[in-house]
Length: 64
Image (cartoon, helix red, strand yellow):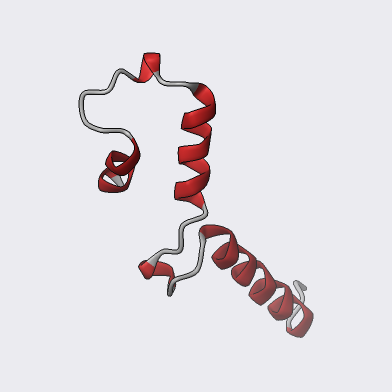
C-alpha cells in the first residue's frame, strides 16, 4: 500500500501542507482501484459480493 500512496504523495512531502481535497481524491482513487488479491475487483465490489453470498446462504440456512 505504501508504494501506491507514493504514486500520489512523494517521500518527504509535508502532509500538513497538503490540500485536504487532494488527499480525499487520493483516498478515493486508492479505495476504488481494482486489486489483484481480490481477483481484480474493487474493495466495494468484493464487499458487495460477500454480502450477496451471505444473504443467499441465510436464505438457504437461516439462523435457528
